[in-house]
Image (tube, rainbow, N blue to C red; front, side):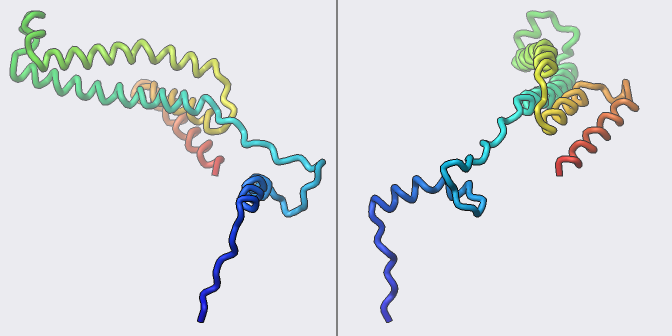
Length: 166
């Protein structure tokens, strides 16, 4: 039995099909006329979402560096009597340089955080994701031990908003 051969496509058919592809995807099942408007483009992405993601990434980096700083400093105390060394002796140790690099980065993040938060505060969220992102940044910058009730309320509000987007 002979296999059926697919129809041969010419360049003209391919170009015509490619030109119609956007209209096929936008179809509502009704034929298009010259007066039928095409569907509106997808809404622009909320800029606050990206700002919040960056803010949270810096917060996670800050937490990681704080833990690392404590670990390195503890090692230096145990192995080199760190707090009794002079500044010159501290700089001579490779781990001392590592600790100073961590502290420099933490200082940068500490100064950068208010700038990022101010920029986000002055940018209006245009989506539920943006509003949730702002609240997550507030929760990330808050010490749960200082305001336990407020922190729990904030987390509950974030969970409520996340449930609304489903």
